[in-house]
Image (cartoon, rainbow, N blue to C red; front, top):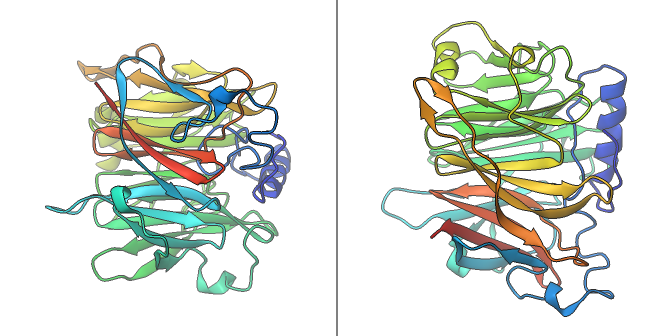
Amino acid sequence: MIRPNNNPRGLQGLALAFAALLGVGAACVPPAAEGEGEGEGEGEGEGEGEPPDCDDPVLGGFVLAPGYAVVESGVLPADVAFAGFSVPPSAPPRLFAMRADLIAYDFGELSALAAEPAPLFDVLADTDQALAPGADAFPSFLVVGKGATASGYTRASDFGGNVGAHLLGDGTTSYLDAPANFSAAYLDDQLVVSGGGLAAVQAGLGLYVAGDGTPFQLAALGADAVASGYLAATDTGVVVAGRFTADNELFALAPGDVDDVLAGGPAIDLGTHTPFLTGSYGALAGFGDAVAIATYDASTWLATGLVDVALPVAGGAVTPGSPVPVLSQTQGCTTAMPFVASLQDDVVVGLTLPSGVAVVRITRE
């Protein structure tokens, strides 16, 4: 899928889209305003001729729907692409973020973000240190699990890439070959990556698991998939997986079905499943036992809001609810939404404001 993008990652969108069309298994980079790490020309043109309603110091041009409340917020540098939260036992959550230099940083607590954050680890593997961030190598994701942070990037030269796992306990970082990696999520302590393969398992577009043992495929995206999509997991173990066919499609995988594969069963084929949402849906994050999904306008590639979709599990099946608005963009505003992340039972959005990227924690009332 090819779309305009004014930030450095726009080249990745073009390159990976062409690769997908050529059948080399590249991940889909959804429209620039969809969410996670993309933005839509962050900072560029914002406030120029826009109505005053676009200038909220926390939400920019977005309006919060009834039933939801802002818990806390902070501001990150304008070049932050992704953010996630570590929740240590008996300690406040800490915000980790990847910047344009492809370094992950520890910004500290959301209520007191560090002006000069400490570097956490290098997203680039040793073999790719000569690559120029934003020109030769492009960020894919940063996610945080129990005691570990994972990141991904792809190379412009061959659409290959690596996934890095950084252990918070001893500070070690290891890397796995991961062609066309695009998104990821932690399922308990196991990292699930959406891309073209992981380590020695190169089975085409799908979801791959990196746990304590040998990586394996959790799900294939199906024969109709021409590119991958976003990925999230809920507190109850529902995996929400995206793919691109002629449109963006989202699937909800029941915990029991996922557990069967994790126990050694065959990989799931999304081609045999029915998507619960199709259309202009982008970046995902678990929102307690539900999922928060960024939305965009397919005609303008601008962010339009954030929706909340309930994913109740009963009798081994997931019955997705209808999308409920959480954030809506005021007409005439163009505030970007670079990322969406989970924080305990809440959701956190990044919103590009003149002061930087606002980090806004939202809860259900």
